[in-house]
Structure formats: C-alpha cells, structure tokens
Image 1: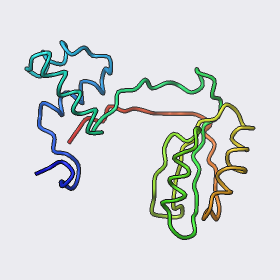
Image 2: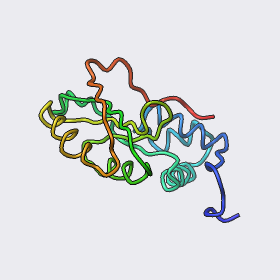
Image 3: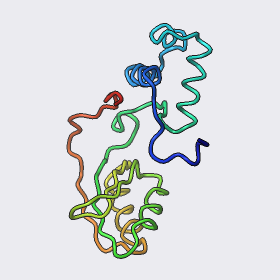
Length: 157
C-alpha cells in the first residue's frame, strides 16, 4: 500500500524500536554502535535511522536547559477559543517563543508551552500576540517556578 494511503502511525518492527530507544538514551550514538546493538551492518543502520527521520517518527535534537542559554521565563498558557481551533493553533505554532501547542479537552481548548528571555517578553507575547489572535477568548498563564522533570526516553510500544 502506498505510504500516503496508510492511516495511523507507521508500523515499527523490533529493530526500528530498538534504534529509537538507543537514540533516546544517547542521541549521539554512532551508526557503528547502533548497528552492533541491533545486529545490522553500519550502512543498514544508517538507512534505518534516515527512514525514521524522513517519516517523522523521530527527530534528533539537542535539548537544552533554557536557563543556561539565556531564557529566564518558561510558562504554560491555557487558551480558550471561540469557533474553529485550527487557525488559532496554527498561529500559535508560528510564534518563535512557542515550544509546543496541543489541542485539549477540558477547561482549555489549547495549551502551549513558551520559552521567553524574561517577564517583559512573556507579557508582550501574551498581551500583544496570543490574546489578539482571531478566536481567542481568554488565556491563563502558568509561570514555571521550577522544572522538576523533563525527559524524552519513554521508549516505544
């Protein structure tokens, strides 16, 4: 079946799942290390990783501590929207300070996490950009006081 005709997430075999888990543990693992761990040649491991990246199943990125790279304010913003959610979600996703946007069920329609240089930038972002988006009815900002846990090594299923 052509890739575009499939529905749902791509099916991962045990080798691909193990590659993902290895890279979640160490995103800088060499192809040689990956190949040895999963029983493939280095070239085959490289091809598998490339396919996982191209299909959007995974990304390999540097995760930083915002405080150590000049961003002193993080917050979660709950947003209530009137009407269609997609335009507001798309507009939020286009803002540089927004790390992620999720559509939710419950008291908020959308949640977004933001990373800002300081409180002034957060105030400007919420007041001048987010609250003025078409359809946005209200926002509630939850300022992060301490990041107790953040990890990306949940494995695969």
